Length: 232
Ligand code: CA
Image (tube, rainbow, N blue to C red; front, side):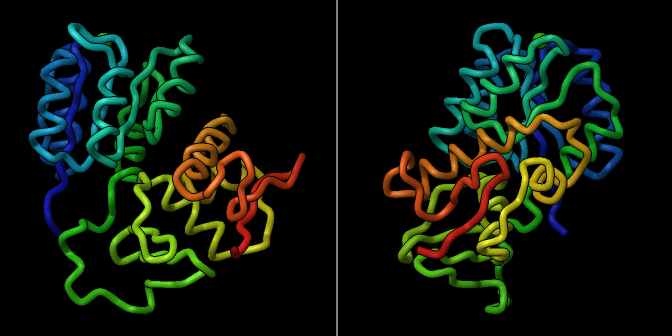
């Protein structure tokens, strides 16, 4: 398997050093930036498989970087936030991050998050793609070979998490899932119950998927229960 590259944007050297050391030990290639501007440049130039992004950075903060990366790329982004900064988590997700980790974090948790968020299949290794991995749900096509969803044949510009959420719900169409259940099944690890992550991801998914995101036809809300997919 091709080596996956993680870009670490973190100005606190002791943190970036230990993160880099542990990711390298796990077989990842790493790049490190110690300020915001440099981090953004590397993110756009070096085509990483995942970005670990601190919020408080010199020259440009993590939110700005997140927004700018998203204008160009769907690379998975994990925001590193300090413990008390509740608002950062939601803002980070709103701006297109896929996940966040609260400092101080355990290294085992960090590695698990990196692995859970990184693309398991590179866009380039689809030789021998299995047609069984391409499924139609009405006008929506879910192509697991390419990690791509299409609507009436047109690719949707989804992040990995948005794709996986759509795939999960579509493959179980009509069945309603609570946010807690979705966190466990789609995010794939103990998430300490922050269900806003699901709401924010659903909202972003709808903006890309629906003709009118305020009147969704595909990803529907069952009030007081959760979300489900409807073929349209
Ligand atoms: Ca910092």
